Image (cartoon, rainbow, N blue to C red; front, side):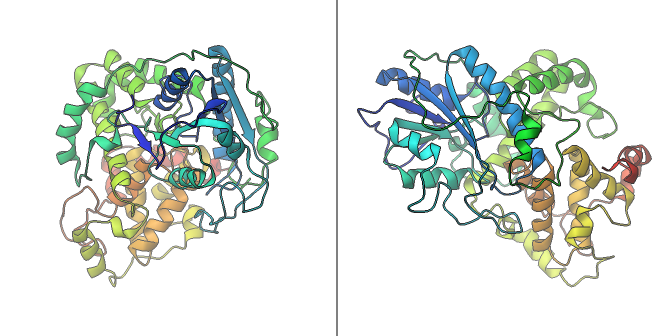
Length: 478
């Protein structure tokens, strides 16, 4: 695996002799004890060095958009991991921090404080463990706080830190440039997927030893509400009442989808009132499931036409999003909007808006359009929104804000704060799709120019809007 395109090494790659173990630092995007390329690489290297492997994961309270919903999902995943690693005989140390070491801005943007403590401060558990390790293996992820955290650890320790891509079927490095459309990306991806889409075989540690931990680890069990309440995070965003985190819940959802949703997936997935979509995106974001096992399970269970449509959504569009974020460091900004679309949006900046809503009004679902309000309430209550409605939801914000930069900022904030699959490449690809990315010019419209327009009113011809509004009406909001 040493030449594998999944590896993203830093400046130093040679393990340091005389150290105690190989450390796998789990960063929260590959939270699974099996089918995990990062974990496998750590075990492989540990076996070659004749050392045990230690898995470490920390949860801090000062990441952007930290709230009860996200914290609860992560802790539910940790509870499953503690059982899984115990069963595999692999030492797993989880540390829950209840102290905010670095501040973040009111917009949710990451703070500039040192992730692992200010100079001269008591070193974090991660830094202490990394300093004892011959090698650190961690997760590669092209957005959110992951790239910065990896960079900071490399600056803090002399131990080599190698990040491993466990998020994609085809490694991100396979493609040497960003692709502008799904049409151009799809044939290259499908050709490569033939070689990469297979069951991931787990490696077993060849050397087992109990490693001394000089900090108190956290056993989660059934203490999740108590643990979440102890953290200085946003307690106004409640845990989802319908989505539970962790591998157990993820496998249950996958089984339910393959048993009941696939038969009508291709034709019925556009109707948000029908339960034929997978709803697996939160589990993909946090890595409770791998894309390999999902696609292989669906391929085995589904007729070929239904699988082809699912594959296009779960493989082509998802990996196009990773390709976008990996190759374009501007993916959180309007600079990533295609030139033609930016020109169209710029040319129509002065077009009258039908109305203006503040970010707070939009967050509270206080618009004059009840379908849009119901979409936002799905985020507020459940932490999830149907994909077709996300497109309508996002496009509509452009109509009601003064410019597309404001639109992008609001979409990022609302999605990443409330949606359990937010803070993800697919999120940023979706925001930018609303502003012309991966798309072509359409008919000219006020405000949008030639950027594709979508009408909330036209949705009535596609599904029972009234039923959806009743489902997420104002009275259902907590």
